[in-house]
Length: 259
Ligand SMILES: NC(=O)c1ccc[n+]([C@@H]2O[C@H](COP(=O)([O-])OP(=O)(O)OC[C@H]3O[C@@H](n4cnc5c(N)ncnc54)[C@H](O)[C@@H]3O)[C@@H](O)[C@H]2O)c1
Image (cartoon, rainbow, N blue to C red; front, top):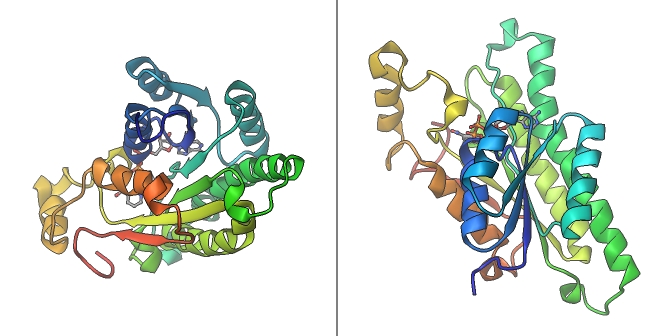
């Protein structure tokens, strides 16, 4: 018996990086996994390379796209047990130079996108609970929402849009955790430090590795790998964390405070 046998996980941004790793770990541990991502090429690659992962093309910024994708998942698998919000982008810039467009892109993807996906799942979970009332909260099906915030939520030069989106996720998580526990939906977020994934682009290789050296020196346990984050996410979806709600979990490589 595997840890997530019979469960269904939806991972936004699952075509790359932290979402891809999380999707793979869920699949290894028995879950049926749906990755929801706008990157068709990588989405199809992940689907082809992994048993028990299917890809649905979609854009978390767009409510019609989210509604369509989530309806398809519920139709195929009956429910979603774990929603992991990993879709995210960086479009950095100092405050005085940041365009409104870059502000909107980041807020819409990283913050509104998580809200839209959560809302579509939550509506269905509440309807299902109402159709089958229980005496105790704990008797309702156990659902989890995990969003990927960032240590940048605490501030990071050049990332006013990103930092605001990730701090927004913390407020959203706490509020959702308070609102939704009556339906046995637990809501958490993780706050990773720098993890080596495609979102970083050239950052770690440019300038003769100057930035790799810099960040390696700033993070006591070194620049992170994807599994450090997926392990924490799977824990927050597991039976072992059943009694927890509204956890804001730093994955900080040993460093407290901004990198
Ligand atoms: N890598 C890090 O250092 C780090 C640190 C803290 C937080 N995070 C957060 O973790 C999450 C995952 O980042 P990653 O490092 O895996 O990046 P990544 O670029 O490897 O993956 C992000 C995925 O999100 C998808 N995506 C982007 N916009 C989308 C949209 N509108 N609709 C659907 N899919 C969309 C991309 O296609 C991509 O597959 C992001 O929210 C990021 O902000 C990353």
